[in-house]
Image (cartoon, rainbow, N blue to C red; front, side, top):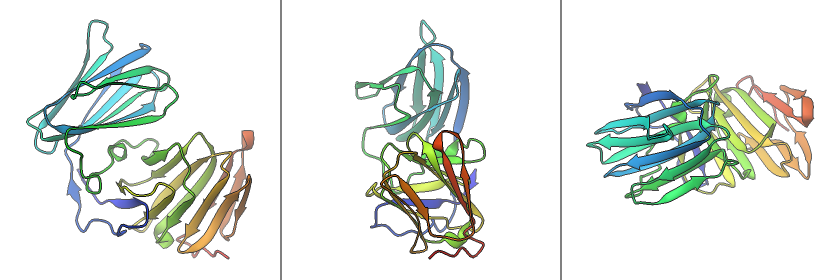
Length: 270
């Protein structure tokens, strides 16, 4: 599979340019039916790696793995059928994405004999072992599993103060949704994520016709959307204001609000 990456940057100290050439990733996938209330994920690996856990569809476990110079494997077993075993053969680095049912209890056993548990209220968790991977070069594994035509490219319990889009002319659609439980960025194409300050997120679409959805909690107290250096939307003290034309606003049940922009259509912001 060959993909061209867009870029999300957390912080201000990174160049915002997509990689010059596409990269090839061999991704192994499998899905399991799972109806139990507790799952143990046992990672068996001699090399380094990372594990990302996301909560998803009820009654179903999905696994995606990438081991550039090895063979990843996984199986659902154990005496009670409640152990998901992840391993890799001949790999110095392996990355796993596991999507688990929304309300189950999850225990994790890592290669360094660390036992951890994922709280049932937590939508996602990330773990690493061995030498630390170079995050500026690795694609987020969440981007390998699109849902409803969009990739979950970034998520956080905390809401950044600023989301800045440097090249809004490349966005055919931008939606800002107030009504979620956390902060999420969903994209119609895979993106690369680079570490930095989580209170200021910079996004560069990189390709014309891209789409971006930003979801925030409905009670967000402080947030700014900046498009091409101009303030487009601001949430402050429970009040939300938009400063751009070409805007469609929808008010839904339970106080949810969706703001839809079409930046590629000569968006004008005051």
